[in-house]
Length: 394
Image (cartoon, rainbow, N blue to C red; front, side, top):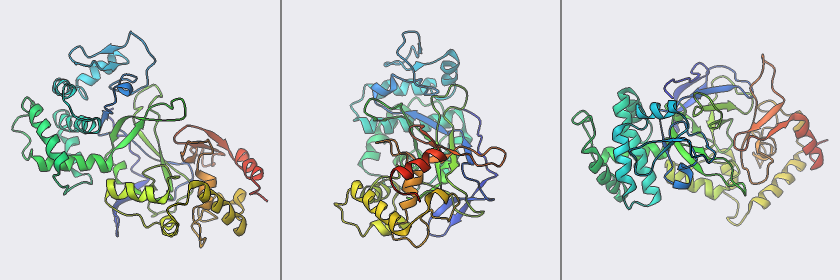
């Protein structure tokens, strides 16, 4: 997890009026193209013991029940490693002697689960300063400055004071204060990506770990994104915690590339609440400007009914609309995400994932789309058949 593999040639960071820093395409992008592949600055586990006992504490690979996995002999609650390579790698990076001591103190604390997870982040952040000063400085440059030192920040700072007393770089980090703790917590809240545990019975997924990526943190949000994020944590091999960003459709040179910070099928009120509480802004995208006029009582079922009505009224020829701007819902429709929901929302029940084409091969677009949550694959033929089954195709 040391090598940064970001494809910087396809995107660049720029100031976007009213949106701060964002990422734009440096050349025309094809549907399904990999825009970025990046190694995390830091990664830390969720505090839920039922989750942490089921994956490797270094590479976060999901593990089957087995008594043969390695553990840290010094931890009060032993962490599990999938191999000697991961065990030794953790001892020089994510699970140094200071982290081990800090987690032992944390395990005996009375912090609630959410605060416990935030403490895990702060331990990982200050450990980053031990193993890589340059990466710690990158972390400090991310969005999240000027955070308020509230009661939660004071509580967590008090905990950090207790573990920083044996931090190995004493005197080499000027500015350690409640303000720095609050700033780091804000950076975590605004920039961390959740790495999901495998789907459980009933379709529920939980976060197994959180990761922060230096370049991917610059992606702004849109409720009708033109790209989405994939991760393949359970794929064996190096760099399995890399984030991979793929385009949903063709993107013009100079266009901003946006992700959705949550599943695209969340209702308007829930999206706005999450964006305001976690990221400090209200979304005014085309989709939100339409949905803000809806009643709070309108359910997803009603939304889907409106979607179908709009599509029938406008006679959208979905089977022929593959290029950006051709029925992507970005025209003058009163329901701009009608096409998006049908084309890019995963059809698997209760998934909520986003479908993106597989990467093109030798300039030829792939006819197969992949869900970024459940991995479901759907061909163009399957899609067109679904349209016919629902009476939406000519």
